[in-house]
Length: 188
Ligand SMILES: [Zn+2]
Image (cartoon, rainbow, N blue to C red):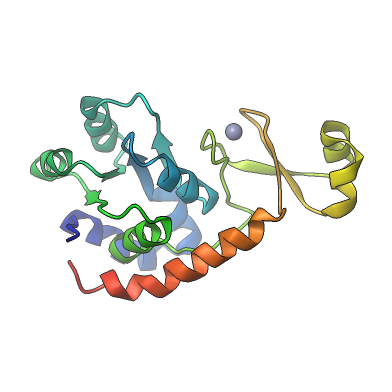
């Protein structure tokens, strides 16, 4: 019971036209207030994704229209309004993160893989910058520094990230999501 927007088909052909890195740079999303988890995941995968728990419907529609963002929503009436306006939109019906990611990937061509050079802060959507171990040491203290080699910092909110134990969870969810893509591929 999943509906999709034919509008996003344009994105798929664009992917092959402009090359994958450029495609990631131009494919943008805006997520409704019920999709904070999906927004964080898309940011980790490098996709520019706006999300705020206070975004009202009119604002979601305006941002989708003005910034050419794909609207992600769990609200069927909002989805219909977006499509009536000719906006690209996906109606998300699952609550499972792997299914949600697989559905977005199947309908937009988004690639579900982690690339540290394009990852964004899951909290604020800013591109992360790699920092040296010396800088991480000054910000975090010694114990983590001995365990891990790579660190990233968000230039906006200041959060520091590293590939810790959660990494196995991220990889297993991405693996599951990639296997599920085929389930949604024929449902345009
Ligand atoms: Zn941040």
